[in-house]
Image (tube, rainbow, N blue to C red; front, side, top):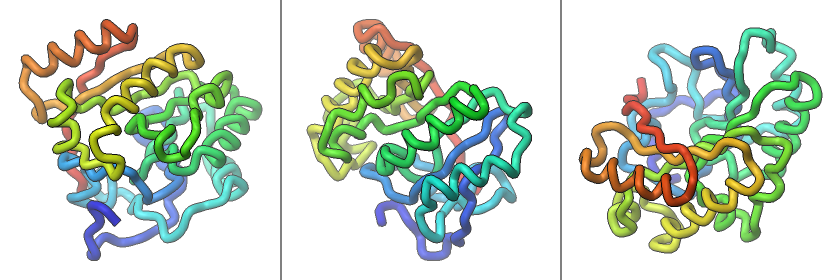
Length: 214
């Protein structure tokens, strides 16, 4: 698989905590192999944390059962974001999101590369309505050619436009849509161009910190 190093250990860490949020780890699969992705450097998002490389993909039933291990009053938000692209398992994601909404009434966010429609071969955005409160999409760069170099999507050059279309469509069904870049990976001028793209789309621009896997 792209970006995977053979020495990384496997585990079945389905849910994990980061700050005040509970994260859902559904898959190792991803249609991208971003040059700055923290999973190239380690198997956890925090030093000494459990490995996020899954031994196998959990079922929706298994994911829902994992929530019983946590006091959900401790968390502000449930975030679908692991060591793979959550849209790779959109059906499981939607089932678990509905469960979270019904049982815990928590805000739900998806961190995604925005290639979900290409991955699934259909428009998945309308299916997010009522289940997802925030979609955070990795923009990474304002330049289509550089995007291809940075992200290295299996869908090639069409991934950039598909990602922007995903953000544009998400505005129709999801209350909060964010496009993000990673600090230190592009210039300040490029960040300004990214902000212009976000302004034109009517979405929020966020510069997220660079993280090194441990």
